[in-house]
Image (cartoon, rainbow, N blue to C red; front, top):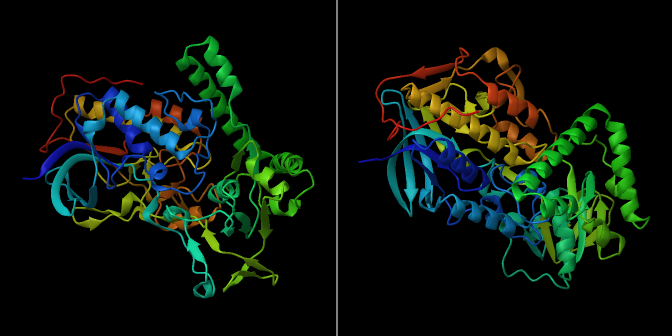
Amino acid sequence: MAQHINTLIIGAGISGIGVAVHMQKNCPQRDFMILERRHQIGGTWSLFKYPGIRSDSDMSTFGFNFKPWREDKILAQASEICHYLQETIDEFKLADKIHFHHSVQNANWNSAKNVWELSIENHGNVEQWTANFVIGCTGYYNYDQGYAPKFPNQEEFNGQLVHPQHWPEDLEIAGKKVVIVGSGATAITLVPALAKQGAIVTMLQRSPTYIAAIPSIDFAYNAMRKVLPESVAYRLTRNRNIGMQRAIYKLSKSHPEKVKKFLLAAVRLQLKGKVDMKHFTPDYNPWDQRLCVVPDGDLFKVLREGKAFIETDHIEKFVENGIQLKSGKVLEADIVVSATGLEIQLLGGLTASVDGKPVKTQDHLLYQSTMVSDVPNFALMIGYTNASWTLKVDIVADYLCRLFNYMDKNGLVAVVPQGDESAKSEDSLMGSNLTSGYIQRANQIMPRQGLKAPWIGRASYYEDRDALKNASFKDGILKFSKGSGKTVKSVKKFKLFG
């Protein structure tokens, strides 16, 4: 007999744990479970092991709205984020809700029974499960492999080629010549970290990225915590940082030249004439691609002190002792790190279908930034690309809980947002905002961007917060079903909050 769960959350990373807490707090009548294909929580933050890995968003907004980030660091190391997530699990008693080594392979919605029928691999054995509602919290990239373009003649290279997603635990760095190919958040994190370990590091980029130096410590937050309750200080700091993020993004779109001038002036001050500004002057406007940040200007410090180097050029080919550039210059290397990004994948690779018909996410829209059009009882968690990912998780999770309570109060077993072809654009949900390579690769799998509400991916926390808080379930788009199907264990307690 198949095991049944009311609400199934796929993934025990920051999204899955966040959704679980919201459900526990706001939908006590629903039983839920988190299935995690790996052996530990944390998602990104436990998978990646490369030196220096840290958040690229401030922790006051990357943390949950219900749990203060108690450290004074603005950016956090991966281990610190995992500790924060484990604290969340302990505080909200979620450990029994998480099942490791459970990989969802297939999920088919059975309209006759109003349930999802799932094939789940558990330690090599395939089990059959059913669920009323499925929430995908797996992020948008492939955990098995990173994006690794084939470089010309790379087989000629006598050294070691490494991808940050699969960093060898025993990799010897000290005294080695290391070339890091890339210019995004991973590359700018690796450069100072490897230099600190004694490597001779060169960052090779095809084109520059906007990079801003920020303090590593939030002194204002520290000061507030001395005179205010921690929850109040956290909320004030969080609201301040959300406002700053949004203001910088909007200003970058409305006055790009002014923002560009400011950012480049700040970099110039950091480099102190020791490094050519051509390496930090992009040919695009701020926030056409994600803005990168470095704590206390650590990247600029190792460059200006000659402890690391930077080259802006294209790869002609790999040679035995390194990389030959288009300019003819050869960068000698013992190790080449391919910090070239992520292999894009939704739903952790599972195959979804409705009554046997495959669901191709790129053909669908997202209703209220979460539910897949024309797919019953199914939601995705896709965070912001222009702000902290978790901001979106919190407000979408609140919306879903309100929806669940509405359905349970009215004895409804299924809901489907009826798609609107006239609202569909050619852009993907993420590709309409940023031009980064990994975002453009995601165009092949991401749901489409909508042209009108409630199908628009707003890329604005304030707009999303207000829209989802006030959204009506009687809008003519959501189609609800009563009838047969396994329902919640108990509907004695529920609350329509928000």
